[in-house]
Amino acid sequence: MRPVLEAHHVDLDTPEGRPLLRDLTMSVGHDRVAIVGRNGVGKSTLLQVLAGVRDPDAGIVRAHGSVGWVPQQLVVEGCSHGEARRRALDRAFGARPELLLLDEPTEDLDHDARIALLDRVRSWRHGLIVVSHDPELLEAFEHFFVMSESGCRYVPGSFAELQVRLADEAAREQERYDRHLQVWVGDEEKHRRVAQRRRRKKAVGRLHELDRSQSRMRLNQRRSTAQVSQGRVAGMAESRIEARRAWARASRRALAVELPLELTPLPLPEPDGPSITLTEARLARGTRDVVPPITLAVGRERVGLVGPNGSGKTTLLALATGGIPPTSGRVRVRHERVGSIAQGAADWCTSESLVEALARVSDTADLDVLAERIVQQRFPLALALRPLASLSPGERTRAALIVLFQRPGLEVLVLDEPTFSLDLVGVRALTLALRGWKGGLLVASHDPRFLGDLGLDRLLEVGGDIGMEAALR
Image 1 (cartoon, rainbow, N blue to C red):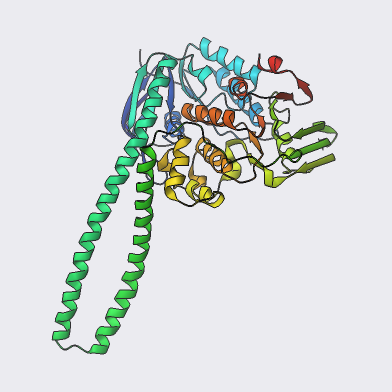
Image 2 (tube, rainbow, N blue to C red):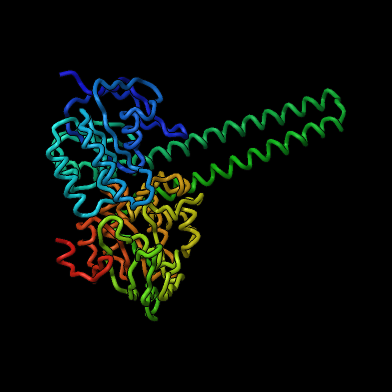
């Protein structure tokens, strides 16, 4: 049977020129394949190229049949993110293409929509390529395309077997990064010695110029201009090099220590009333209540927020953190005790790196200590020096949580779909970190497994209080 889609010798790079894929050749017919891998390795980029919405940096992609595509980032107008995704999936499955490409299709979906998607995936008889971190969805596949910084490979078998491989691979990636960093430092030291020899030769050359009796004023002018220019460039370069050397030493020592997966937060402040208080708080748009009147106090309680797409969970969180004022009622937020992370950590898109943000809120700027705290969360050290805005949503969420846990006086975490875009290692790290957190939680999520693992005291459904067992069934 002729394949629906073929890729020959495809290369992919990031916009900054970092290689993602090299010399990829593949053909897909009526296969069912899941693409998995850590955040930032290029899974979504590959799907865009296969869908024909982006050109590869090298190579050719040819489609010999109809190809459907549902991207991760959707245009949302007049509806919630979940409603927009459900409509896009309905259109894609309804068109019945010979090959369907889905990028994180379970993101934003409520319980009923997730069940409907899983049924569709299991019964789909045409070609299907899915990018996902969702364990329940991945359990429906037995063919995996694993992407990593070191390349790509095909892995057959169950999802459980794949999880073990991915955990081992993540540990090896950290060690490989550290080795590369040490090689870089060695190369820089070599370049420094070469530069020293060149400076000595230049000094000898100046003596020869003096011997030729050139004008002393002219020599001094030339020498002064050259020294200022070269000194400025050399100083900037040396500053960057020294920063990388320091980070190399810190990362090497951090990786050499066996650390627990849980990140240890700072001690909680003394109990002094709730940090978030809503009293008959209501938010209306026109004649419709987006958030019906609600009374809620959150101090050390662990509260989960559930509800179907479009029910107002994100709006309620914005109300609870003081992001939007209520139409009626009162909201009191003790901002110094509350930390929040929006969906995809959109509120953490800054030019700061994780190391810089962590040093700003921590009790120390010691790189060794900061590196150990980052490794505790299994966060890739290679990403810790990059601007937070350049990270993927999942990477940024993990980085934001690391920073918040080290913020003095924090009592309540407010999280909107915190597993959004997280890879498998990230979800596990996040779950364990939040289970070890002794403060309050106000978290909205469509993932029943994740909520069930958090040890919640209470579940709220938008519009009413429901029992834990009923919500998670």
